[in-house]
Image (cartoon, rainbow, N blue to C red; front, top):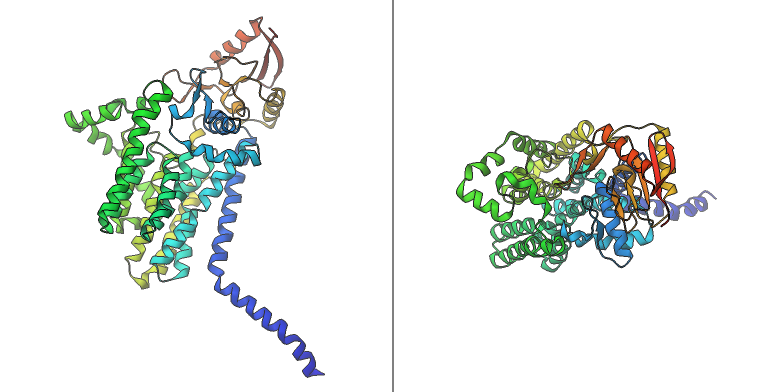
Length: 499
């Protein structure tokens, strides 16, 4: 009897043993997968909390929503210009046709949060090429997982995730896959990833060109490497010199950020040749040094051991450093997107150069420091995205309810003019104007606690006084063409009278 009982349990025991063996063999992948899912859920919940509390505005989330929504309606990338109120194709400001690829996401879930989730999920999946690259160059699977976890713990990645949304942020995982495929000499896979990465922004061609130069010199594949570099530079040149002027009917509005160094690519070259000290003073400014320290510190500067690959991040760094003011030089902003892939991949290569015995402790050290930096400087629930810190304000639950009520009153598709933060909820329509521009608006939503209106000269917001906001409201109240619908806790809704 005892023997029979023992025999009956032997198959179950063997099955359990096989199951444990499988788990043991795939434990590293399971841990990384769980971390990716947890990170995705956590970052999405942070942005969702910002969105429902009206901390995410029409600039920039609403701009992307309108471009994607317009694409689903058969008008690819059409937007309402925030400054002039004109209907434009987005390519006149940024050449990022990648947004067209998000149209199916909107078709599946018609909500701004769908685009938020797409960005967060894409960034989290960047851990996969980091792991694969580390698995190839490090002797330990555990070390490879730790480096991939360090990528997720990198605080500036988390800030990019909650800064919803920017096409260039999607370049982070794409560029990491580009590095992985180049490292394996898988040129067709690299070509596919690089084309999609380039579609996230007009300046991505410069980054891809720098990556091609690295490949030519580091791998002695000069013909292929310089072909990649030429293609990248061609993309940026065509974007800036042909595409943007064609759709903007003028030069890029963003050239205004570079007035100190020439105000255009040609002007920059002229300044560099005639007065190079102006350019050098911008590049060597204290805020640039501080920015570099912030980028390096969470990774213990490990990427400096792979200076060739790390140098690919220099062109986008130069672009940021030359911009007027300190705004772009904040690692919490999405501008870091073309830097993160190369410092992360450089960290893998740097660890590899330490020697086999140092791979595991080195990876562990990077993870600990990155995680510690995240705890101090990373985003948390209730913290606004860095791009909205300057116009962020805390509001009461009553004010949120008033905004919810105001937004619900505006019919779907109706042309509307709205304050920035209310506009973040109203952008899935053909005409969405920014207060005080009325254009063809049939409805107006004014939040008196949101005084940030578009600048008249630059593609950014400027703060108006309470008196200016009140004057705009009074103007509508006195205008016979408009009727007041509600006034609740400083939130005003107006409707244009018929005719």
